[in-house]
Image (cartoon, rainbow, N blue to C red; front, side):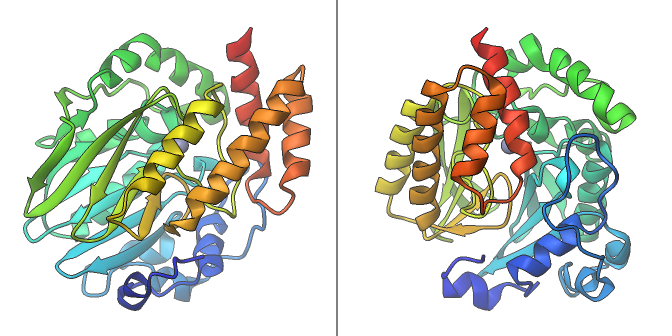
Length: 335
Ligand SMILES: [Zn+2]
């Protein structure tokens, strides 16, 4: 569901309802072992045409596998590319300022990163930089494509992310390769620039960068855009309509982080790592989810029990297949 934020709804150039948007995102699913779409719908070419930004040369939209939602805030546009389900419904956010583009996150699967790159090229502005939000593979594997297509764009991340990728990136890719074959990156793209915390202006847009530890991941960036009243929360906040990823045992601290986000006042729309933007109320629903997951984790001896109990606790949330994935990693880490 789009947030109640009327500004975002009114100015959204791609006026898709959430269900239309997700239909589009799941409409071109390729067979994928272990994952089934929540409600695979036929692709709708009309929606596909609507999904791009009017006025851009987005002629390839009708064949696009992912979906794009464009939200406008005065002179600033946020283009959200949402991958199909086999790419974990992960977002790449493209912030379009007056003269340049900033890309956040690079997709799991190379074909989807390729779609992002092609869409970015239709916008006709240079890519100032690429910023990686955290070190989970679904957010960086496709940086291989983006750095090839935009060789002048420097890649930024918080201090510590590059070390995590050096240490574990290749093993992560190797673990995905049996499932995805050549759709997963062949090499780890390690950010070369460190993003500093606090406010800075890029292309006239204020970004207040924040660093959070021990939540959905060990280390996570968030960015507050106070002038647009947008919080880019990435995987700190999940949609009330989808299961959250619970791949590490940081439940208690994740809830503390969510309370910290709630205490921030300068935003009413949250862009998230997976699924369409949400209202502030999604923080409370994420807290509810994480709290319940913690309780279930405490009494579940194995991944299967955890997964089944969590799915039973939130029967209406989509991406139930992702709970199995989370449980596997959560319990593998415990051994
Ligand atoms: Zn993620």
